[in-house]
Image 1 (cartoon, rainbow, N blue to C red):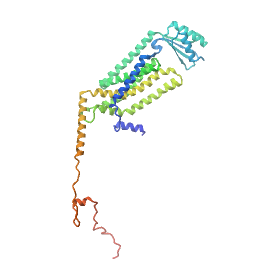
Image 2 (tube, helix red, strand yellow):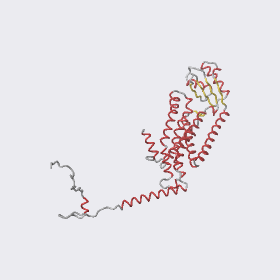
Image 3 (tube, rainbow, N blue to C red):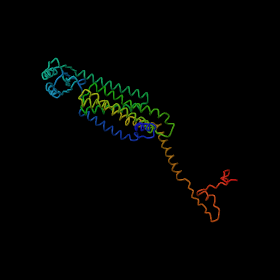
Image 4 (cartoon, helix red, strand yellow):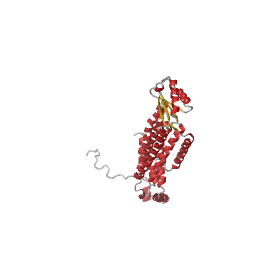
Length: 378
């Protein structure tokens, strides 16, 4: 068995473990700091919405030798200063996207591109997206996200309890805020693919959280009938028992997504992969963090406020204090044999106590050698 497998087995059996729940204030502080940074980035820079949400025009050119940077300069000049996003297509053409561009402004751009690329105007495909349609798509995306959140909370409240549902909801909002904030800071374009990526990472985040909650639910059955562990300690044991599995699941999911983001979108220049791969990569990492450091400690915080759990924690502390006091008392009252042994005078027979103090010699057996041939002839 590998070292990681051995560690996972020890974590599952409770032989080793890290006290995540006891250090929850540290994790809360880190999450608050990251979340504030994401919100500030979102407020200052805003999101780079694609034309599907903001409206605009998309131009696709046939195969050309014109570079993407030159095509961007031509498109921005022809559109009157609007920002153009240029992507290279696999067939050698270019995809030029300009947000907030109407029908009247799109025609001069199409003609200028055709002239610069030395192709016919009809060979440049143009797609226009109206601002009202883009706003409707954005509203539908937010509505779908809200419905998803409500259904998740209802399911978790039925399957587990309302405290776990609330903790999972806070963890999901945490993951969404961080992912959207990273998009604002990096400046990647937000497209329908981004929304798909966000919904996907919420599923991954819930998977790890539900696994931990399921183990916690089983371990906390009849918890108030014992006095060995508090609820926080049971929650920490459940978290440690699934820690290696959560890490393995996250790493395996991050490897292909990282390949899409850094190799496909970065090294190979397939920029169309960035919108979904960045959401998946950041969301998976944030989801793994929140399921370990946010959701379970938050459940323990909420549960410890329950009167039954408060009474249980009080009984556990009292029993441990009693056991510690008893151990100290037994250690102090440990009998010590300091009775002096009488010395045997010369010529006197030793007393039984003195005789038992030294090494004992086995008496020579009188019958030793009987029945053995002596070797003498009769």
